[in-house]
Image 1 (tube, rainbow, N blue to C red):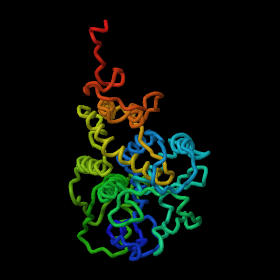
Image 2 (cartoon, rainbow, N blue to C red):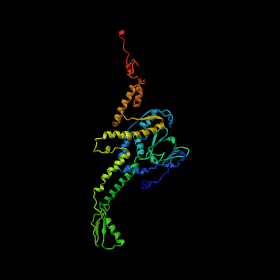
Image 3 (cartoon, one colour):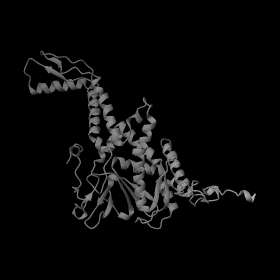
Image 4 (cartoon, one colour):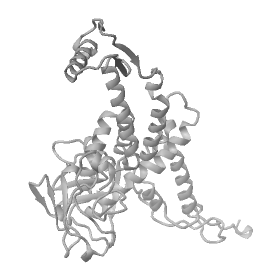
Length: 400
């Protein structure tokens, strides 16, 4: 058991082997290996974690999915569902109780904090299941036998869409993206606790009471109680302490209140957390916007789009329809759209694909009359219609 398991009092759920051969696995109940409470607590208590996670959740949830045709050859789980119904579930109304934005935010929050997404499909609607409540039951005869929710409800594998993030040690569950920063978050938590305790103590540094006489344990205890009563701010005590019998007070050390701020350490720790989340620190630095544009583009390309694609792949596998991310409303990715438009224009003009194929790749509806492949204009005599490419025939002077 790792040190952070002991720190948070977590018990190991299952000992998993690294060998992917199914018959040799320990087929036990596999719940979340991560102590998601620690990540959830960090999300609630640490501003930088809350802000970073919310940034990814908000940006990811606002990218819609374009539902394309059925994927040929894929063994999808659900059969007979119409394309329009899948589009409604993934872009408009997943269930009668949630809008699509709230639904997606729940999924992505679980994905970041737990490394897993679990969605229940009842044949009509999609429902988010909290990842921390789900256990995976495996067996020797099948990869996953069934899922259980809160040890109370069992689900068939055909009812659950499971999307897992990367994991080194498990073929069943993903790992939280905050795991590399777990130690850093614990340090920040301890620094906050130290600051709180210091000021709860009235900002009084450690003191030593010295007496030239030998005191009994009873007298020592009484003096400690008296000191605590008078100088703890939560007791309201502010009376001066009268010392007699030769007792003196020595301060253990001179405390620099600037050192207690931990500002430099906090800034470095925040950078570590943002890097674990895949967020360029400059994006949350309100005082430096010089390089915000290229960093924003990198953030979408390296962090947001891979999450969107991974989620789409999970729904593709379940429903059997091609899903693509629609980035037309993302300002940071407009250069990608211009590059894509130039790329597909070249393919169309080169006679490689049809205009409608290009429109489909760009996420546009096909247009009537644009299914034919154009013949390149540099191929002499290939066509008589300039709209179709090729050089038009030259009129014979004798015909005039």
